[in-house]
Amino acid sequence: MRTIVSTGRGGTGKTTFIALLTKYWIKKKSLLLVDIDPDENLAEMVGIDLQKEEIKTISDILFDIQKGRVNDELKSLPRPVQIEYMFHLCLYEGDGFDLFSLGAKWTEGCYCQPNNILRSIIPKLSKNYDYTLIDSPAGLEHLNRKIMSEIDSIVAVVDPSKKSFHNVRRSLGVAREIGIKFKNFYIVSNYKFSNSLEESVKELGLEHIGKIDYDENVEGYILEGKSLLGLPGDSPAFLSVKKIIENMD
Ligand SMILES: Nc1ncnc2c1ncn2[C@@H]1O[C@H](COP(=O)(O)OP(=O)(O)O)[C@@H](O)[C@H]1O
Ligand SMILES: [Mg+2]
Image (cartoon, rainbow, N blue to C red; front, side):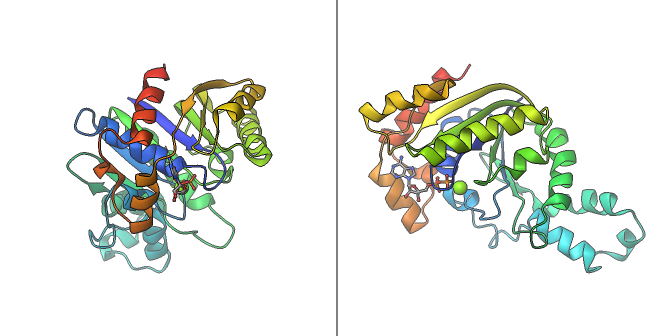
């Protein structure tokens, strides 16, 4: 059982990275995918239409519970118990992986409630899988609120911008400050790095485990809403991720 979390600025390729890890391990390992980004891109990138599957998000069930839209038998139970009973409505169980999403913001500016739930659900659930792959939003709140108590690897996907480097330093600081237990904090440089720029990653002083090459198929597939699991096996981005996995401990 290993947990891998993506982090980094918006648009660096975090969700693509998680989708390509999925492509690598699918059918070889049991996988739980968790989308804690309110933008909810992960399902689409691995070819799942949650609405069509009638799968709810954590935010959806919280909303239902708040509005009293739950079975009568559940109504008298404490909220956390109601949530546990309803969680199965959020879990997509597929052939090669299971997946659930946090969903849209719960109330404006407040993630605390869904985050508290994730904190109790993820550690319990992830025990049943070889890998739990968590796709996170650009901000740092997911780390701040301690959703996960134990993580194997945090992987920061960076672009060559100063802002991106700054974001990584802050994430690492936050993770340490609040005492998240993690074994590794890795850097992956994204497709925007030229070979000459790549040297600059060293200034972060963190373990750099590879670069994801530019891949026009990735761009095209995402644009068309196609599953990245369907990328050809010799796609540059997928080959990059294979190498990166070999470099992870
Ligand atoms: N290896 C790549 N090659 C080309 N374009 C990429 C690659 N990875 C990501 N992209 C582009 O970057 C965009 C953002 O990627 P995404 O994984 O959604 O980033 P994030 O999750 O960090 O916001 C994608 O829509 C795609 O156009
Ligand atoms: Mg994303």
